[in-house]
Length: 410
Image (cartoon, rainbow, N blue to C red):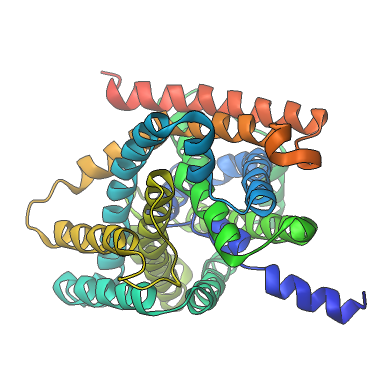
């Protein structure tokens, strides 16, 4: 095969891995990184290295399963562990994803309020735009739009560079681990892991691999797609932390969300960097508002054995389209409602995701090591060791997150 043919084949396969990983940098993820940089400076940068490895491991597994089986993760759980197990898992994921969808619309509203645009205008417009895109567009169109939106994440790189950090200090903090025995430091560390590896990402990636028609002969190229996506998403996270650590941390400025970070950057990094940060937040929020409801519709329909897919119409896949529609409409309505419990829903989503993630990863490990299912494409022993170590670390950190969230100190 010539070089150009290989490049053409990769471009045909490319998409699911980059999109799935990039959406980890949604509104809540950007908030987490912004708060981490503002509160602890560069000292949390080193966490991104092991988190990147963990993300590559988990995403590569589900991508491989999608390519070998041609089925989504929910399909495989239902077929191998029964409808009941699939139903309870899907119910929990629905609750978590609904809270995440609300967070995405809240981030979208906050980013446009920076430019003086009311949420009563921006939220309905954004909701209608993404509803039309998915319900009336094709899979290919949706993928192209999402890939283009991923490029806009580079705005955070611009903001980070314009902040003019001390690069020697940045590099030192990235390669030399530093742990502060403070509750807030531990919680933010846990949050970085939790916002990078989420249950819905695994379901979305495998479903999109299956719908796109990527097969076992494309596994190597799909793996490249996954690795590129994981590297890009954590490079973006790196620059978000750097931007806030360089400007806000020395000034002792505390923030609680990413929109505050965009405003706070203005006097330190300039108006342009602040605007780029805010526009990138709007992009990330809308991207998350597309993908999280879409992932929800995929895995619920797979678990129930219903027709699904972006290429389907309302008549061909009514449950898929209605689940997506209800998630979009309800999420937007709650953000617009005066006095809505936004913080409660976001915390609830975080807790439920934390509880479910170990179960999802263990299901993945069990399925990917099933020879009847995967044949020669099961995990090698050395890869299993790395994967199980990742699962155990995630379980330990998730347990701490859930306990400290449900029973906060003091």
